Image 1 (spheres, rainbow, N blue to C red):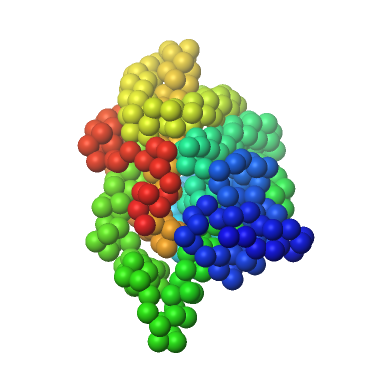
Image 2 (image 1 turned 60 degrees about the vertical axis):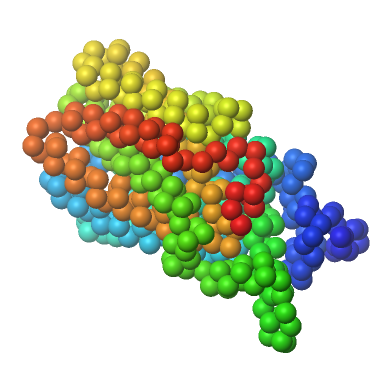
Amino acid sequence: MSSITADGHAAPAVNDASIDIGPLEQKHLQYANYRAVADTTEITKTHWHIATANALGWGFDGMDGVIFALISPMVIKEFSLSLPEYRSGMQIALFVGIAGLYFWPWLADRYGRRTLLAVNIALFSLLMPVAAMSPTFAVFVIARSLLFFALNGEWSLGSMLVAETWPARLRGRVISITRSAWCLGATLAGAITGLVAANFGWRIAVMVPGVIALLAIYIRSTCPESPYWVRAQDRKRRISETLARGGTVSTEDSAWFGKAKSVGIRQVFMPDVLPATLVALFVACASTCIYGTVGAWMPLYLATEKHWSTAEYSLFYVFYGLCGFLGLCLVGWLIDKIGRRRTFIITLIEGAIFMTLWVYSEDRVLLWAFGLAWCLGFLGFWGPSTTLTAEIFPTRIRGAANGVVWAIAYFVGFVLFPFVSIALQQHTGSFALSFLCIPVLMIAMAIGVFLFVPEHTGKELNEIIE
C-alpha cells in the first residue's frame, strides 16, 4: 500500500503488507527522512544519519563520564575531601541519574524516540558549565546529578532508534560501531584533561565538552521517527477506536492491545516478557559492575598507586579510548558474522586475561601494554551487551523495558558496587583487589552468556518477541 506524500509522490510500501498504513504513519510519510527508513531493505543516507546521531550521543556520554573521572583527584584536592566523602557525593549523583535511565525511555514509548534524543544533548550542553562553576562540593554534586539524569537516556534511546530503523542483517554491527564512539569521547576527554586541565584547571576542562555538544543538537533533531513506534501507535489507535464503537477485533489484536494500552514497570515483568527481562537484567547488571570500578577509580589508582602524573594517565586514556574504539568496531563486525553469543564470550575472556596481567604489573611498559590489551575486550563487550537490550523486547514497551533494566543495573553496578570497591581498598590499602574482582566477574558473565543468552543474529525485531 502506498500513500501520497507532501511532495506529490507515492510513498514506498511498508515491508509488512498485512499492516494498513495508519494516520500517524501517513503523516510521517510526508517527510523524506521517514520514507527512507520505512522500507528497511535498502541502506540510505538517512540510515547513516541516524547512526551518526547515535554515535555522537555515545561520544558525549564518553566525554562526560571519563572527564569527571580524570579530574577526580583535582576535585578531591580543591574541596579538601576524603575518599569516602567523594565516593558518597558521586553515588548521590549516580542515584539521581538512575531516574533518567527509566524516565527518558519511558517517555519514548509514549512520545517517540527522535525528539528526546535532541533534548538529551541540549541539557548536557547547558549543564556542563554549571558543574564547572560550582563554588562548593554540594553544588558540584547537584550539577553532576542533573548531568547524569539528562544524559542517561542515551543508554537506551540511541540504540533503540538504530535497532528500529536499520536492517536486521546489519543491526548488531551498527549498534556496536556507534557504541564505539563512546571510546572516541573518552579519548577526547583524555586529551582535554591532559592539555586543558593540567594547564588551566579542571573547571575550564569541564566546560569544553558542553560547547562541543552544541554541534549535535541540529544533527539529532533531523532524525526521523522510528517506523516500529509509529506503526505500534497506529495499531493501538485502530484497535481502540474499533472497540469504542462496539466493533470486534481479532484475538491477536485483542491480546496485544491488552498489553500495549498501558506502558509501565508492571508490563516489563509480565509472563510473556519476563524471560527477556531476566536475561537483559543479568547482562546489564554484570556489565555495570564490571565497568564500575574502572570508570570510577582507575585515574585515582594510577595516580596514587602507580604514581602516574595527570599528563601520563590522561595520555593513557587517549589510547584507552582508541583501543576500545577498535575493539568495538571489530566486535560490531563479528556479532553479525559469527553471532552475538560467541563474540560476547570471546571479548569477555580476552579482557579478563589481560586485566589480571595488568593488575600484577609494576613495569611501566607492561602497564601500558597489558592496559591497552584489556581495553579491546573490556570495552568491546559493550557492543553485544547494548545490542541485546535494544533488540530483546517488544516494540510496545521497548523503551520502558530498557529503562527498567538499565536503571536497576546502574543502581547495582554504579551505586552499590562502589561500596565493595572502597571497602576492599580501605581494608587492604590498595585498589588492586578491587580491580581483580573485574576478571572474576567477566568470566562469570561469559559463563552466564553461554548458558542463558539467546542468539538473535539476523532476526527481525518482531521475530524475536512481539
